[in-house]
Image (cartoon, rainbow over all chains, first blue to last red; front, top):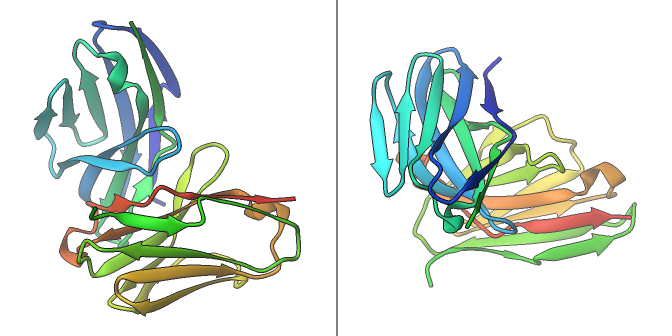
Length: 110
Length: 113
């Protein structure tokens, strides 16, 4: 069964303190791995798509990377506005649906 | 504004009642979804429609019935509500060929008492 595990559950950072979020996955035939951002009281917002091991995508202070077993979301010099829950999801060739992890709740303090 | 909208935002009701949640998207997408997010923030797909045709139907109690009058609308009707139905329900839409890039609505927080 396809599975996605994210760690840590919660992360508190000082502004400017870089860190990484982890997404480990088990999927039979990875079609793609996706990162979403969810602000409190809102729906998830699409961030990145990664298709194959070694691929990297960047957007402002965020960089997503992918290996055959996991993905990392690196946050460089975060700002308070980066505070949100970051969700990882996978899409496999066997199913036609996104499987989400439970997310990492990031809080960045000034 | 172009977006995915849901009504109502909050829904508080008693066990045994029947309720509906409405969803509309004006992004021109052809695929729409319903997700349930539980208290642990786990987001799980319930249904997916493509051009009014049901394409994903997860193991969801048959008290839940989606209805898509056209490709811009996907409503969710829930019969005989139970305490365990309390959650946030999200509607989303996408283009079928890019179904991972989903645009989510703001969610409907359903509380069953």
